[in-house]
Length: 92
Image 1 (spheres, rainbow, N blue to C red):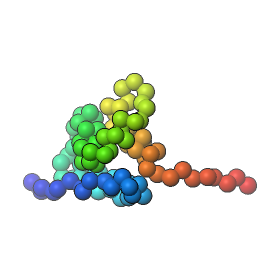
Image 2: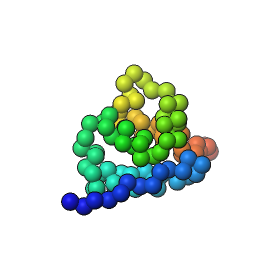
Image 3: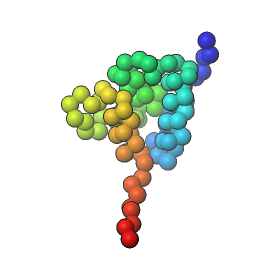
């Protein structure tokens, strides 16, 4: 079995790196560990652990609907909202 190390911790001072970091994590979870086939609670915890200690503070600051903090896609959406810049859409 192929053994790969998880991606390096995410540098929260560089939020622009989130998309690239997440892409590496998704490769790690799908190819190296098959983590994507596991329970969502395990996936959420593996994500937070791999991101690093500082990410725990960010995660704890999120507001979720009841139970959504255990749903992997909902957690990813919250991190996307946090790290990705908001864009102003100009209507003509």
